[in-house]
Image 1 (tube, rainbow, N blue to C red):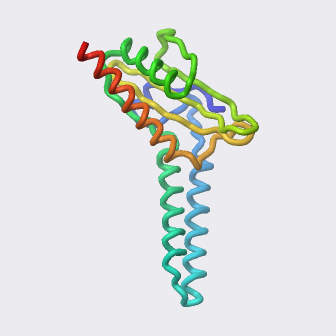
Image 2: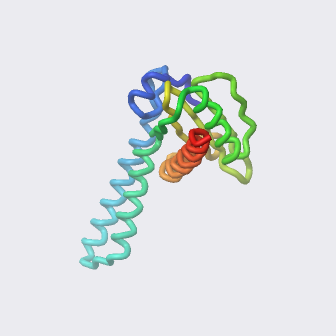
Length: 178
């Protein structure tokens, strides 16, 4: 797993950043380059035979676009503006407990992290929440075999973060009305 999260640097970069100074960017960059090379090889193969099957070309372009989105959204933090740090902390814990069926407790922390190891029939996950004065930053990563971080779920994890943001804002909105 990664080392300690650098809270200030992560918030300013809007990406998870670790105190060790060494980010795990080698695998996503390598993956990105290999996907581009595979895509170019397929395009050259298709054009060499002078047969341009549009569905195959669209499939390759779609796959490459999906993988690029995964690499870009791999460590991205979703920022949510809240009321204040105490309300934000209690509300995000409530939303995470409901959304993922967890048992997190409010311990006045500024970094909330929940790690579920992968098992025989399920993917693992790392949920990271950073709290600032009036903002909440959310990131989810999927763990695959041997609890290695999967770069293939960046886009779907980003969408999960957006759904959590929506539930969090609804909960905060009901508090403001009361």
